[in-house]
Every structure is written in structure tokens, then in C-alpha cells.
Image (cartoon, rainbow, N blue to C red):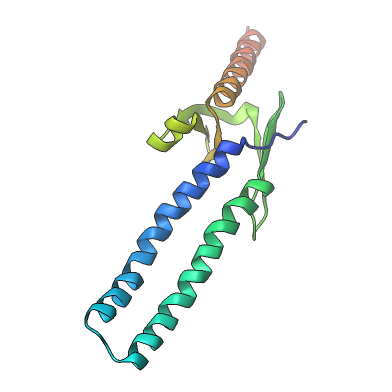
Length: 164
């Protein structure tokens, strides 16, 4: 089975999502420092607060720049007639194998940013759980769903012929 890597546009999407989340976390400490500047707080108080705020913000910015790149490099997926395999994870590595014969539903979803970048998520539902193949190009997602749908139809026809 050939394992596929994600498109480069996925990295842009993950950077945008991470930046939006980090922006929410950074606004509060930056607001505190701004208030201290406007109220002309004592130099020692301003320095202490700036250090307490600045160090986590710098660490967070490093996290924002590195994590999506590592996640992108570690993600791979592939499928054949019998199974779908997804490998992912930076700190905790995960390998998921989904038997094609257990698939019940296939869904392709897009958010607004994903539409702009031409990306889609594919959700695969089995009797026990749901699993996402994260951020494929819309063409790749449609090809995957079409191939799996065709395989499932063939399998249903085989089962129907065996019953007769």
C-alpha cells in the first residue's frame, strides 16, 4: 500500500488555525501589560509582569511555528481494497487501520478557510466509531470517497449473490 503525504496547503491551514487559537491566549496577557503601561505602574511591577507574560508568549509563538510543521511531516495515509491506514501524531504516534468492509458512512466536510484553500476532511464511520482523515485536497477526498463507495457497492453485490 502506498502511503500518501498531505498537500502543502494543509500546512497553511494548520498555521492559520493555530494562530487563531494562540491569538485568543495572547490577548489577555498583552492586555494586562498594556494596562500597566497606560497606568504608568512602577518599573519593578511592570518588569515582573512583562517577564511573567513575555516568556510564555515567546514559548507559545515557538509552539505555533513548530507544531504544525511536525504534525505535517508525521502525517501519512493510504488505502487499498481491504483497509485504510492513517499514521499521525507528534508526541504520541498513532496508527489507525480501518477495514473497508466495516465502513458504514463516508462524509466530506469543509469549513470556510478550507473552502478557500481547496481542502476537505473525510469522516469514515464504522459501527464502533468515527475517524477523520485530516485535510485532504478536495479532489483527493472525492477520489477516496468514490473509490471506497465503488468498493462497498461491489462488496454488497457479492454478499447479495452469496445469499441466493
